[in-house]
Image (cartoon, rainbow, N blue to C red; front, side, top):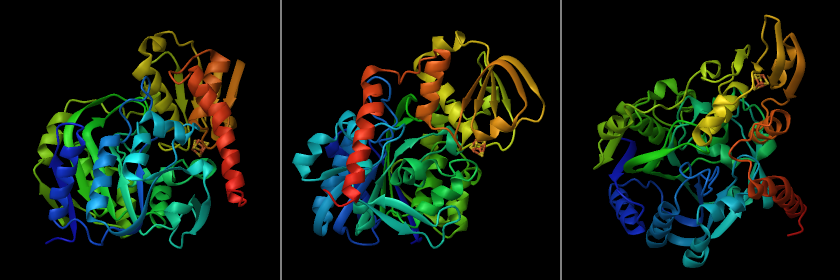
Length: 427
Ligand code: SF4
């Protein structure tokens, strides 16, 4: 028996009974290497869940329900179960719990939904960290005995076309720390966090998978698989193959393997279950994952890229914004004004009517323009790009909806204040 084991179970619908049956079979294959006990934390992917604009890129509640049933049945002396998350785009995690339909799980299974931005936190010291020496994580995450990751099977243009278990950890930290070194150092940053939050069990929702486009608004397709493992690196190597990707080209997977968090090749992994990898590859064969250099994105903008080239930073985040428009408002692409977009420090001088500088490095470029808009940050946040493109160029992303503006600009700051008081000991 090999040390690393990944179970790929066929499951054709979001039926909690079927999902539970797949998980039962996976556990019979000795996937667990330690008992589920004590304080259990489940970390799903709820980067955004919205009935109109973000319908595919998050972990479905039926998969979490299957996990809860397994915990209840196989857990030994389970004290409590917390579902802990921090959503993306500077919107409230509570709103994503609601959007994804998680709230009924509270009563049905006695679990708590913990939105990181409004909760107590702990500082985790990272002795092996290359980027971070310490990070702030949810108290429940820090005090857990057993950690279950529930990622979504999906692609992501910021991380070499692949999301997954390792990348899920970006949602373990909060806004400022999340954007700190979210640039060419993103792969090392992702692996740093593993020291504080390394899952004991991973259950991936691949019944439908999300691909191409923006990580929030991307479309989806049927895959019919649930992946179960006890090692995040082994899990990601197998799931990358499932999508037809080469894990050696996904830098954070390579980085995690080089730091001995898991295997370095699929040959070291025992693949079990009734869903063949080749079936996944066949489904993905003709799909466009949208992982292209931002300057080659077909639109009316003239995009100039300089140095550094940050897939996980300015270049990747702006590509993600362009995909967001393409995903949900493709006709708007044709109406884009002529703008020269500068990302990174560009060597040659640029003369333009309208110039848009993305990120702090771009400000070191020589630009002569009648109208210049700068979106600062290293990198700028998605929220800031959406906001500035709306207010300065009247380009309304699909996220520009009254409910989301209220959530992001009124509720979210209030939740942060609640979290601030909680950390002062007032909750
Ligand atoms: S400002 Fe942008 S291009 Fe420059 S280092 Fe930061 S993320 Fe990279």
